[in-house]
Image 1 (tube, rainbow, N blue to C red):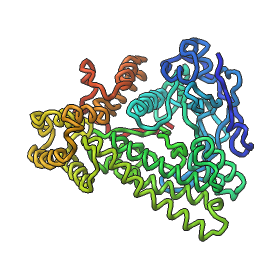
Image 2 (image 1 turned 60 degrees about the vertical axis):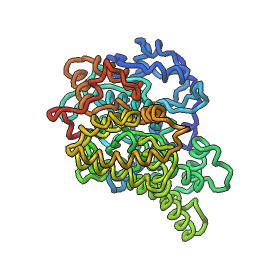
Image 3 (image 1 turned 135 degrees about the vertical axis):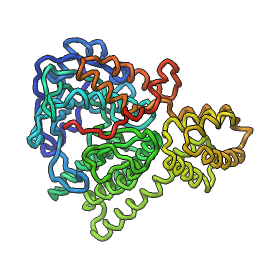
Image 4 (image 1 turned 120 degrees about the horizontal axis):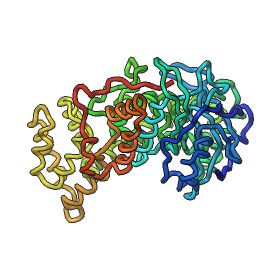
Length: 493
């Protein structure tokens, strides 16, 4: 089995990582191989799904050219700094340049202890592995920048959490695994040389068009801030709650990474949180832009020694860039909201129109995804307003807002965008299907209690086409009943 490895991070100085081999497991079995992603990576999906493939995907056998390492990083966890974290249960096998010319990391998550495990077992349970597979692949299909999942395998061995659970390993694919916390690791040690090396490496790997300015750290900071502003705007567009936006979970590449206690909104509520460890709501849905900016401030702090020779000038430049996040996010979020509302031209009042709508959704407990999908039909035919209004405890509230919305639409260039075309465009940004929390919990229970992976297979298949109606699977688009509601999600460590 051949991976065309071309490893660059493993060639960075030893203090960037620890060399470690995955721990062998007893009886690996392939649950799922992502055939489409395997094709992009130039891998043979049939080989990956074979018995030999199971040995590789579980870490029992290292493919030729692999240079397994665990990455060093630090991070702020719920606002408190931890100077050494690192890959405690994940091992980077190496990097592959896909058929599309993009370089990607291939990492085994749940592959055993590393020098960064801090007493943990280094393992993963099947539930969190299936959750990450479903959600990361759904995010990719939704058009949100994300790490991907190449495969999931069970290990034939138990892991011990609050209860004994079947073990599993996830093969994660990422543009890289460099995090804000990676820079913090070296900043905390006063290692300016490593910071400069890392900044130049990250810039050339992820934003090569920005290289050559003479200040790689500043160019990198600018691009990461922009990427994070756009990423979080997209999260809000699909109702995604990351759940644990620590700086060690913030990717320099601008991808969504580390799907632990993540979840999607059912009814719209900006204060909604699901994570069992987020007791104060720090990472609630509506707080995510503020936290992303906070994380960018931590990146800027780490890069201060490289931004300017004069400390005061470095602080001034860093502050200016971090403050600029607000405008970048607002612009990106406005773009997302206009698309969801079917608006083509920009008007100053658009954000107020959207804000009024979100207030109404929150006050009426309206399902976020169902509302916007039904609004697509209303854009094509005002007769569909009745179905949309029925979602509201106060239907008249929607009708009043819809009147303002239609007046705004009437000011669009109707010769260029007719109602049918507008509705079609809206269906491309307002999904019919998201990874509903209760569906994920149900498929995890089926896998854990009965060894039944069919619910997992079905949901993955449907979420490959989230913007299509798929009438035969309409039940997967429905909000949960009261007794099905998920109140808490868990990290899995």
